[in-house]
Length: 420
Image 1 (cartoon, rainbow, N blue to C red):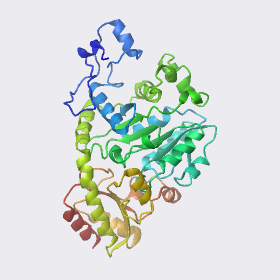
Image 2 (cartoon, rainbow, N blue to C red):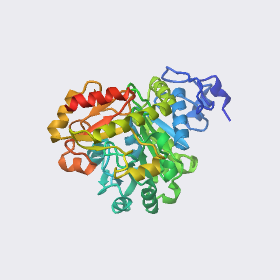
Image 3 (cartoon, helix red, strand yellow):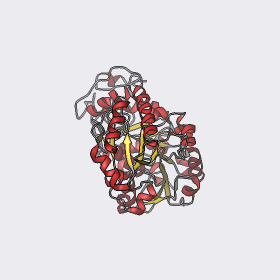
Image 4 (cartoon, helix red, strand yellow):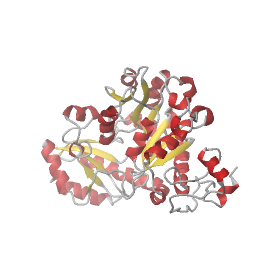
């Protein structure tokens, strides 16, 4: 039941998964009824809002809608996709442990795992590919999580989530899935064995390249108490939050509650209420935009595949793509609007294309209403050496197109003039 005190003190407990008007609370803190109410809110005994770094009514609506879309039990919104990735692994790791990851990752994620986590005493083990067998080979008693992107950016590989979830669970660790490229409309990883889902809301959910945001979604499925020795942060008193034992006191969503009370409260990667409002606007048009994105991407991919100045082109919707069958199985016959290709002439020719486009915007974002072009080896994955680039599936000549909503004839005309 909704606590009556919330009605007059900034609470928002309506069914916020519905498309109703969302109020914007432009404030940094929320008042209490009295000392007892304040203590109860801070102790998580009653629902309520107290400080925007930790929770906010507008952000709460976004969290509930994303949790509903992903079929999760609770979500935590953060300031960016990178913040969501960090929070997702920091919630279950500490110095001396490791995580295992498929190597086909967004460049900043790869760099964070390979270098920043290492400085904090957490080893990131990159598997030899995204197969369940390759990932299983690296899991040991010190492993705390398996991390994959459901659809790799920009490799566009598709992970066999059910197989990877099986080997992770057999060894007592959760599967964390970055579902940014696939979106919750095309794929719901929690229904295929994942335990946690993360998103960069900046991409397809926001949809207009205007607003940063990230999300961590707890599936509520992982049996933390059965693996208490591996996860003391879930099953022992938490000194950073007055000794709460998350797995006992919040059995339905201990992971999400720890992300909020330790991650957000102490590290402060807070999503601004106005950003939440803008992301909610984007979320409302996601189904319509995805249809047009996919339609345009398919035509662009077909055009590139037959273009005399193109050496190779790759699109998950093409039957000859090596991951097409997995994509059809997991994404229900839909395909993200990411097209990669290499121009004849290699690196120099692809850079020339990048420099010559007029309608495509030279931006490193994706999932925008506008069509975007990036050269991953020199931008999003610039910090990676040749061996690491090969590991994540990027060639020196790769051009990544995030195909937008413009008229496809204009897109094809721009491609042709840039390749001429």
